[in-house]
Length: 513
Image 1 (cartoon, rainbow, N blue to C red):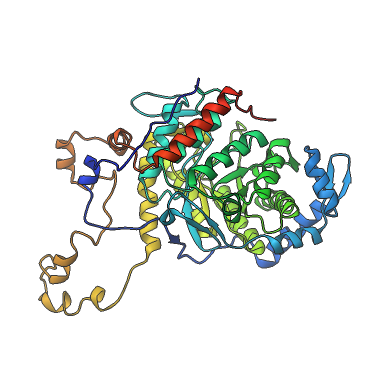
Image 2: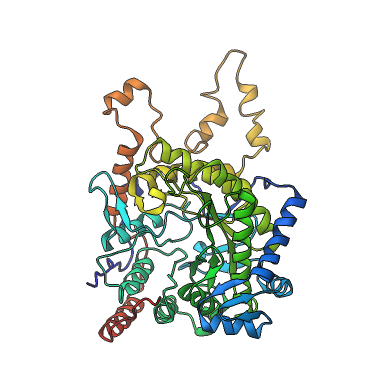
């Protein structure tokens, strides 16, 4: 089945939501983290973890399943025994030297471009889930409709700066699924897109679609990344075929990989925070080294996703104290590399309840205090990644917006201090409602919530006594019912559709394993 993404031609209509937009103007796209980075280990302890990671690569090695990657490592100076690759610390140092410390990600329009570097801050919503869920339709396998609707929700909120592989559209055949997901991202959004690394044929198809739809040459496409992928190592110390191939393909063509070992303490990693982060650090360094051996200067982001398992059930747990500490420790490792880096929030709760909110916020604050450049799974993730919730996207975006407000910073100039416009206008025991400063700013000064309700109990009861999750249903429904929020060039759309039709007739491209 080849479900088509909705078409968007010409200038979009003004929606009801647009008409109700407040006078307050905000820009959550280009954020910087105002918080000093926290640490969980001393400098000496962090240095010992880094040294142990290098020792792990030298003495224990990494199992690499792709022959091409093994050959790249060997030619770069690594010792190879069968499929075990032993990487010297000199190779790692050279890779970290050549890897760019600032990366410009090209989106569909220049105002949506992103700069990946330490100190920047961006959020990606929940990603990679096999299921979608909402209060109207319940929990279900992810579909093409879900993927398109999630893309529209992502595009709608400025605080979600990059697209994500939200859910698997399982009603689209795997040999043509990458055509659908790429077209959907290009026609329903102008943000920085995501491409799965599921084998060279699929990746090359996606690169060609992106290049032609953006109207850039091969050289322009390779000069700055126009998309990104997530590379998960198989912990402990294994780099499988599609992930290794993805690192090579993206490096060769100048596109950005975010290396993300997924280390769960007590399961695929040591049970301690220090041990798990040391393993994660070693695996990330091995992957980063591969990209720089393929193409020095290839855009690469350091990454980690480390939390613990519930030792009673073996299930992954998120938003825990160990998850928070692991994010802080990963930040210490990332700053040693100087590279932009990603961490993650998320929730193990099965529904959008107080547990889900607590876990996601604990995870978010761990990322913020650690200085993560990209926070993945920042909105919508439930069940440890088995589902993405429409309502949770909305309620989590509320928190992200508030964080963005904090990051924007408060001002304290004469206008803000307000001696002439506020303080001198109000007598003792008076009020500031009618002060000139208040009258000038009452429409724009404070954050206006998306779904939170600040009404008193009586008014809230008269409105139906609805909680935030049920109100969130109204919000997402209104957004997905709108027309696409981007303008699409007809000629480029026709070229894209012709490419998809031709490649589909040729059988598409199956994912490789």
